[in-house]
Structure formats: C-alpha cells, structure tokens
Image 1 (spheres, rainbow, N blue to C red):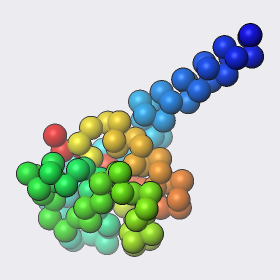
Image 2 (image 1 turned 60 degrees about the vertical axis):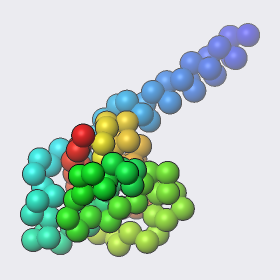
Image 3 (image 1 turned 90 degrees about the vertical axis):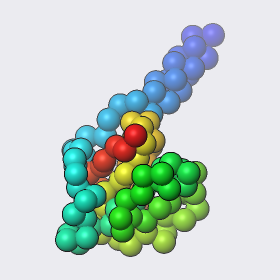
Image 4 (image 1 turned 180 degrees about the vertical axis):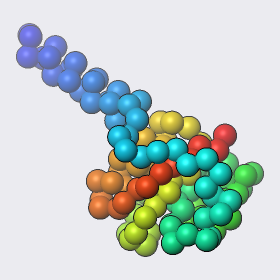
Amino acid sequence: MYIFIFTIIVVIMFYLYQRHFPVWQVPSLEDFCHNASEKNVVVVDVRDYQDASHKPVQGAYNLPYAYLKRHHNQIAKGEIVVVASDPVLKNLSIRFLKGHGFKVIGYQLIK
C-alpha cells in the first residue's frame, strides 16, 4: 500500500515539476523579438496559430507546442528564443527543446 501511495506522489511531483517550475538558466528576454533579425538566433513561436496570428512576431518560426514533437527536426540547430503565451507552455517547450539538443538562450511571454 505504501509503495502505491509513494508512486502516486512521485508521479504528481514530476507532473508539477514539468509544468510549473521554471527552467534554470533560461532568462526572460524582454523586447528581444523586435530586433531578432539583427542577431543570429532562431525565434520559435510555440503559441497556437490563432494566438500567433493576433500578435505575430516578425521572423519567428511558428510551431505550436502540440506539433513540436512531430516537427522539431525542422528547426535549425543553434541558439533559440521561445515565444509562448503562458508560463506552463514556456516550461514545457523549453524542456522539450533542451532535451532534444537545442540551445535555448531565452524566452518571451506574449499574452
């Protein structure tokens, strides 16, 4: 019985960690997307297509998080800045990209 309860607690803690704890050493880059073309950085917009069309980011590669697992190989290797609409989406996207060998240098939240 204790093993079952311990397993449930570990699964819940892992779920909370993945979604709600910020990723270490990935800073917020305010106003980065306005001058992203000057730098050699890939901007990946992980917001839904509808949200991204209301407030587009110039020069960003729009790939919603739901499609990230299937199409992450289309993103150029190099330094990446993630554009997200909320902290949960930001954390999930950055962890996924870092897990697949991408160098994420920052993020920007656009509501």
